[in-house]
Image 1 (cartoon, rainbow, N blue to C red):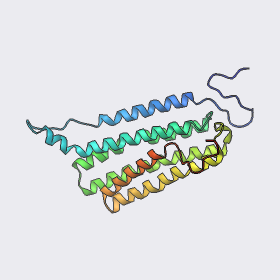
Image 2 (cartoon, rainbow, N blue to C red):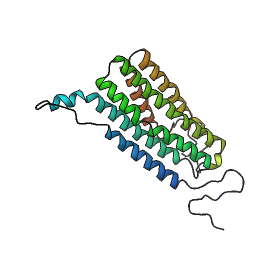
Image 3 (cartoon, rainbow, N blue to C red):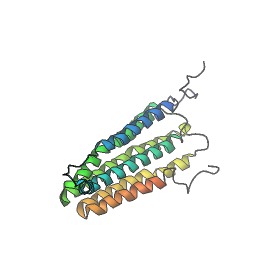
Image 4 (cartoon, one colour):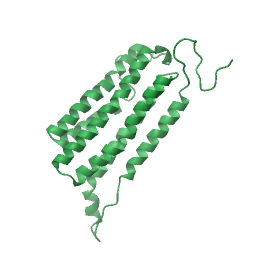
Length: 223
């Protein structure tokens, strides 16, 4: 009997695989919604006649938080796109892990709103808490990515032709780096200076942007 359009032909052993089209479409939809939700937190400032510019400048920190999170979600989408290209099919377990990745993405608007409020209206203690919360959310975001790579390492039959298990092992360094350095960034923002913590978050987002196609130094030959 011919395989269903969304199923990948495979031996009878091992976990049942299906195609990645539905996983990709659903994930893209979630990222699109999340990146749209960010703009809802942007507000027209209250102002008196002739003071609109001053009001907009007073909200500058909240706009910064929006830009950081917009770029962050965009980087996550690029990383997810590169991740899905590594596999020729998905399983029930891998789909659950992917839901964990999406869960990490959908909570980002909340720490973004908290950070924007603290930067605009809070004192130093409020900013410490807000930066630490944002860094904690980003650190927890890295955990399901680590699980995803770990699952692929244990099930190499899911990998696209030409993607080696060695390459997958190398990519696990990226979520490990995220867990550790986002955690340290949160501690830096809490115990030292919230501005330094925010700079640390921006540096980590930049790191994941530049490595969205994966760490190349140990790619398999021919990739």
